[in-house]
Image (cartoon, rainbow, N blue to C red; front, side, top):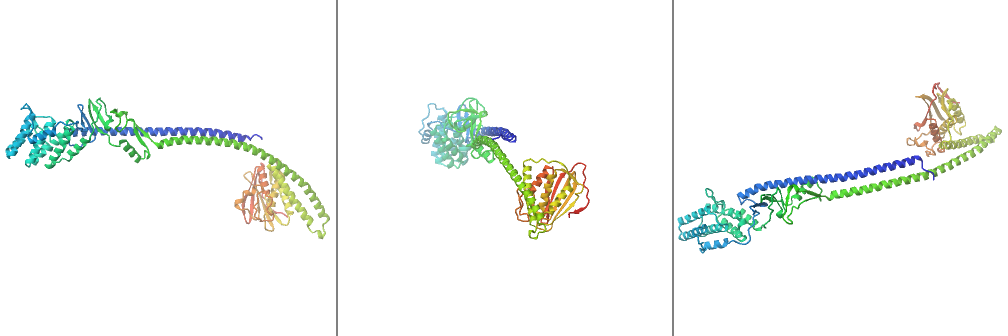
Length: 621
């Protein structure tokens, strides 16, 4: 097998270089894709972290305001707030375990069995005597005595600060004694139970006082006071819904623990709180439930995240593990994106597939080059055999055809005037001439295709070609051919006379073969146009369809429509004509065609200095 042509080797080298460059592009695209995904992830995480940090900071700022409001008014909504003051957890409200005896004290005060202390001047002993005086006045129905006992009890409460269990027991017992024996004044009950008294000695209402003292109360005392104060409030038509709700929330709370070290805005893991620690005091709020998931949901609505994308944090937003302190500036959100992970895997998979494609393409290229080399050798061998066969057959046919023509001419001369012979000898000569022309076309086409015919250029006059055409038309078999020549006199072209003779004879024979009219008319017009000799040949034949005006110049192509006298011909005439025109640096084309005839146009570069003189039309004899 011969080596492939250099063009194939250059093509293979170019393909390899292209595939290497393409692979580098694939690698760069994959790297850029990963970098873009990483940058997108980093930007989303940074944006989410900043957004969440700002949200938590805003929550803490609002918590400070709410803590101050709850400190001023314990009946305000305290849910979610954190407040530790002097090491004591004030919010969320959690009572101490056990009981300090509020319920027992109230029972003794109501039935008069309270034991006084040894110190009769002690505040508790004084408050007990005031309750006893009220009970005695109630028994006597002594209205002035009742009013005086109540006033003195409230004044004593404003003047002396008793422990919560003693203060609340005395006040609750006082109110219950009033409620059992007579209808107390609504304004008095409202002030004592809820609004309190203002002035030089400020006294807080029982509802607020119980909530404020909640961390110092035992769990049993807290539940008892909530029930009794709530019942007294409802009986006196004093608003108590917010008080009872706060009591219920406080009773359900579990005591949290908090760090005591100083810090900045941050998060306490216990109770899912975000708080600020300053000098042992803690102020803050519980995290809104589902804060990070809510952030992700909002971003999904805005198209920034896919449906299954989620955020996780560098520290958990849910209560877990031991109490820990995290500064907000340490908060980092991490994006968990199956979509981005799938995109990264897809980038790697596509890179592998593209690399495999490049390798397969290169292997196919190598295979094509090898196959082309093999086919080239086979084709060269086939063409060589074909050329040798055609040349041999053509030469072998030319010799017997020449002998047959000589014998036919001799027979024609000897039988001239012999009636029974008719025109058979002449027709035999014409048939032999046709076969000879066909063999000549085949041999010429073979030599032109193989590049064996190098034109012998020289001056060729159109007048000499006219003589050849007139002679050939005179011997046309069974048809009358009338030719018209315009501009042929004294016109010379630079070309091979033998090749040009074959060209014009093929055009002439094409004109009468593909023709159904009689006579056949052929008009030859020569002119000089822009440094070229233009030769136009117009016949009155059957015409060429527009779709076949190029294919008729292909070797062995015949229209196959059965029209005309030539039976379709060999399909080599026009192919030989175009190759001769190209060999002279010219071109041959179908200028126009219709059912009324066809015009072929041949253009050949004219020799320098030549002119075309138009001398009118001349009709061949």
